Length: 339
Image (cartoon, rainbow, N blue to C red; front, side, top):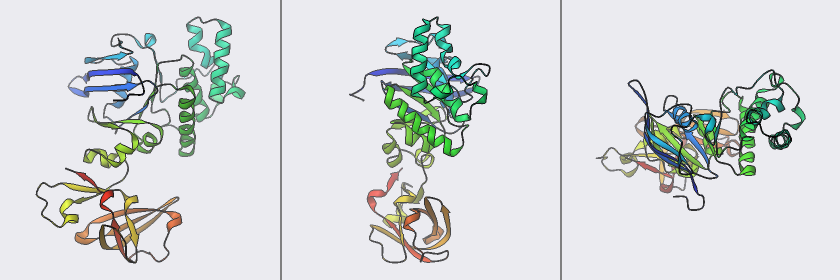
């Protein structure tokens, strides 16, 4: 339990069925004020359905949702203290940036001076002041994303919901917007809940991650915990890359319970010489792939097991070539045990 932040959002025994299909199954989850939570999982796992139920766009089949101990399960999205940024942005192309951002306040008939002050404040926050009077149809994808974010933030929601907000952006722009989201979250101290299927995005942005599979939250925790201490094969394989070996392969005993060990590619050392690690194997290099910042080695070890090894490019050893005989190894502290 988080002792430093107060409870804000409670999801209690929430399920959602579409006909005979169970999209979300009996989820219990608590989000605290100031959290940046990622709901992470593969396509079809129920993560967007869960987010839409929080926002009021989908009605649960059973269970309840509370914000600050108020049951909002049957309250429409327009009356909830939440706001949602959709993947498609949904901007008004005939309006300027400023008009788009101010639209929600105008509908609420807020005083014009307050609308102007709050709009200028948000424009400055998302770094769009210079484009305030430009039509949104003339903006780049990243700029449109900022407008959509600003339009949601100006309503001062208790919970900001983001449905794969960066999916339509190219890689470089996506990384830039990740930095912007982190900055904005830190600056306003709000509570963000975003859905993504991108593991690296969840790890880099969120302080808490809820991993979903087949309608259920299968593990929850901080990025480091999820990555280094996965509770299942699904989580270990979905979050990052893994090498999986039978426990008996390492411990030299009969593997009665079929348990496995998992080693992350970056935890494996590789050399043509002696390796000072707890576990050492001899192997042969099958492939070497240069991936910019990293180099990936595919190494064949005993019983035709393949290990993927990842090293920084500046750690490249020119003596290690394709078909080279090498030694690979790791320390026992780097092993992840899974039943």
